[in-house]
Structures are given as structure tokens and as C-alpha cells.
Image (cartoon, rainbow over the protein chains, first blue to last red):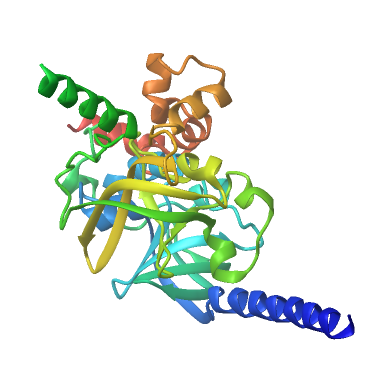
Length: 147
Length: 181
């Protein structure tokens, strides 16, 4: 009887360890970063279905963020990040605090997690907010309907 | 006659199985039709281990975790200007069959969800559940013009555009620009 109990306990312990290992593997290692760039709509930017930057695209970017499309940050070096957290707020679907800075040029501190070709950004703090500085409407109109 | 009947039965069976539920082309760059099984996960939970109940109850982006460990964040559903979180929320923690389009551009491969069903043989749902959910949340008929143009009528959008304008530079800047057109 005792060996069977020991075996059962050992099995449970093994399963618990396996579970812990699997959890540790699925949680990727974050990297501290500081990023400066423009807050963008990820879908329009990455598919280029329309002109996706600055004032020309601001209204559309608001619509898309309110509709739950992931909001991105286009770094000055061209790197695209997907924002999954803003400060202590872990909401990333139609988050009002993210919509407030849509199209702004911001500098942020946070954690970067790279996985399967995407850059996920967990912002701790916006350290600088220049507002909207990318004036593109004279060249591109108001995307996508012109009004 | 037997051949016709057999064909009809086969077609009916295929329709019932949802075989016709395939994504239509959107003409995206590097577009590929795709259908795959995956588990619906809370993105932040999967990446960091921070895992609230119900995948964040609609407030978090949801991902598709494939059996080989590949994590896909769908960016889009079939509703204009809407994402896929509302489409996947009801499947939190479940395995689904996702049907849609991959697009590859600017060094990234992204996914638009067109249809989804619980794996392996659940009923196909068109990925347009955002609209009835938005309509219910805002007390309007989902078939109304107001709901169809949800992006112009969303309270959060209306408030922001009223305050900062379509260009984000203020109402006066909008007026000056639009008057010049």
C-alpha cells in the first residue's frame, strides 16, 4: 500500500512540476526598453490598406482602437510594437487611456516581449508626450472616406 | 437519379459541416487563406503569466495558440474598423477552428479572422459578433443604420472627435482644413 501511495504522490508532484515548467516556458522573458514613436493602428499600418500615419489617419485610428483592433507604436526606427498594457491598466481593447494618445508622438518605458515575429510592448509609463506632430492630411486627406 | 440524390446529400453534408465557410479575398499584401485549430488565450496571460478570470472579460486582446506553440494575435474581424477580441471572447480557454486570411507585409505576418467555431465540429460563426455586442451595449437595434455605422456613433469616439477633431488637432483645425477642400 505504501509504495502505491508514494507512487501516486510522486506522480502528482511530477505533474505539478510539469505544470510549473510549462507555465514558465509559455511566459516569455521580457526585455526593458525605451521607445519613441507614433501611436498607430496596427491593422492599417501593417496591411497598408490605406495611408496609415499622422493626422490623415487619426480619425480612422480612433475608430479602430475603439473597435478593439490592437493599438501599435511605430518606433522612430520603423519597428512596430503592439501595446498590450498601459501603466497598471492591463486593458488592451478600446482602452480610453490609449485612445487619448492615439497618433501622438510619445516616449515610453516598458517591457518588450518578442514572440513569433511580433513585438509586444507592456508600457510602464509614458515619459514624454509631444501630442500629434505628424501632419499628413494636406498630402493624404482624411482616410479612408475623405471626411 | 441515385447520383443526383447522392450529390445533393453530399452537398448538404458539406454545407452542414461548414465546408463553404472559407474566407473571401480582401486583396491584402501577401494574402493567404488559412484554416487551423488553436486554443483561445489571453495574450497578456500567455506572455506574462498574469491571468485574470475569463481572459480579462473582454478587456484584453485574445490570441490563438497553435499546437506547435505559435501564438497568433488576430488583428481584425469582419466588421468595419473592429478587432477580433469580441469574436473570440466566448471561446476563452477553448479550442477553436479559425478561418481567415494571413497578410504578410512590412516584415510582419498578421491574421484577420473571418469565421470561427469550437473545435472540432462546432457551428461556424461569422466573425461579425462585434456588431450585435456593440448594439446591445449601446441600446440600439443591431440592424439599424446607427449600428452599421457604429464607428461614427460610438460614445467614446464621439467624445474624442468632438473634443479633438477628425485630425486630432482641434475643431478649428478641422474646419480650416475642410473649408479649404
